[in-house]
Image (cartoon, rainbow, N blue to C red):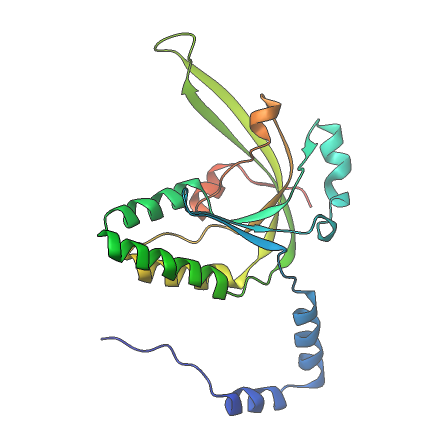
Length: 218
């Protein structure tokens, strides 16, 4: 049985606002003020990745700066929220590739429209974590051998309500079942290979996040 999502009327919304106490109204107003808008959206049609670009001045780096410097971590040169990373972008690409050309082009237009129409307002959460992950790749100089590299990051969680809305609609468009990734920004990076570590650590699902040994640092 299908049920349409209930949408309250403007009159009902106003009635709900009128019934709020002064304290509730103040809290609601303060919350709305705290939400920020990204500087821009970067959708890569080839890789089907989507990043929300952030104003560097909006990011509080001071809370973890001393710890980062102590442990030899480097500050990120730019800041963004990853909506579609390489893994989920690859799943989108796979779903699109399975469609006939005309339908694929129409679906791409739907995705672009969804990106543009989604409210990407966000607010920084107070939680900051240290995460780490080991990467294994073939050794180009030694056939059959592997190279192991550990990356570490200090990240800050973000409240991004539009993320779930976007994924729900994207899954509906593509017929996929992609999970909503934990919204966050990477503040500082470190690891065995400083250059590779600058790429950060992709977090596609909550279960992936928990496997990265998240340690609350502030």
